[in-house]
Length: 187
Image 1 (cartoon, rainbow, N blue to C red):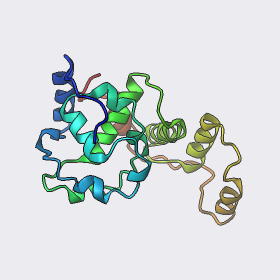
Image 2 (tube, rainbow, N blue to C red):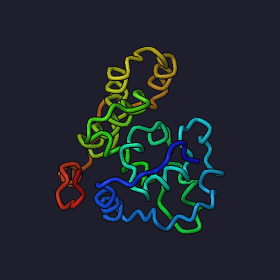
Image 3 (spheres, helix red, strand yellow):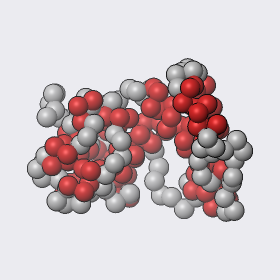
């Protein structure tokens, strides 16, 4: 499961408090392995889903923030649906990605991180995803300018991608969420 000994650090309690604030109870895991067994993308991970939960329970924040697994998780919720203790594992992965971004840690999968940032920036600006803007941002940051150009052109031709954004009426509410107002969750 885990390839090196786990040594709890002084920041263990602080990290676990961050998870508790988000109602992620990694301490409830008894390592049944159902999460890892059901994960459709587990073969690409450097840590099994079960190992991520266990390392989180031990407070191994730095090790988790540098893993490929947090960036490759598809957030399909298969793990959570199989968990007998109802641990919100996709939420845990999201928190770990957020922490890695806040700490300026270079993502183990840079293209996934570029997509993640483009998606969040689009939602933060428009209140929902503006696909053309998100795709443009992702393409510029990932360096893959023409990788799926034929598909994109077909989608535009069929009206599947809107040329102009359609912001939601209450963009200020979304802006408050992105600004962190009312959130106790800190670095």
